[in-house]
Amino acid sequence: MKPTFLAIIPARGGSKGVPRKNIKELAGKPLIAWTIEEAKKSKFIDRVILSSEDHEIIEIAKQYGCEVPFTRPVDLAQDETPGIAPVLHAMKECPGYDFVVLLQPTSPLRTVEDIDGAIETLFEKEADFCVSVTEPNQSPYWMYSLNVNGTMKPLIKQENFALRRQDLPKAYSLNGAFYMAKTEQLKVTKSFLTDDTVGYVMPRKRSFDIDTEEDFFLCQQVLRDM
Image 1 (cartoon, one colour):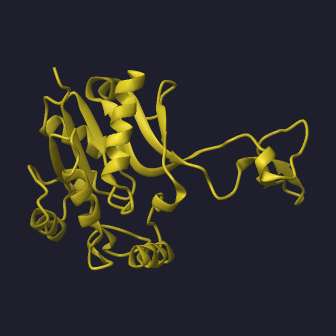
Image 2 (cartoon, rainbow, N blue to C red; image 1 turned 180 degrees about the horizontal axis):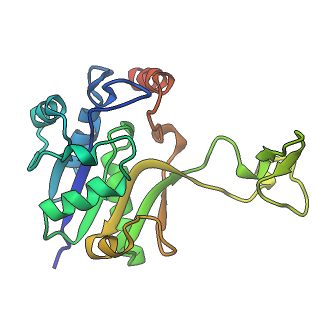
């Protein structure tokens, strides 16, 4: 029997870095529209819903064909609200799905090929959790912390310091594009990141995670050049 998938797009009204960023226009349409449209193209996702407490965001999401089965409680839309809380709330409001897919609207360059590719990876590896990752611009093997006296301490200890990037071990960072999990397992772990989580590698050019006005500007340029 084909497993069922619930996609959740979380979009609260408050935003510090870019005010009202979830509905701010990006290359001709609201930021959130980019995620809604790609999610609706998926051959695996059965239902795409929005979780928001903001009525304007809700109305715009509906205009782009996203279902809004509930209004998120305001106490789950605060700056200090853990990211998993709205997901668990949405799963409770919309029960009965085998898997949940969290799609943050701040990753507008993520495509349906990325989403469905990750779901296929879940099946192939018989995994319960999968998250999107990318190779960072700067390797953590070249990163340091500074001691109180200003001296440098490597974040990762190495026997021999590599001067060439190609000599460094491969490293990956979360890019925020999507998080996937079996619903019953997620209820237990309350986290997408476990010892058994599988990483799905996305190219850096589609791994924009908009958090600042500069991010927004750069992403806009990329979309206009596509």
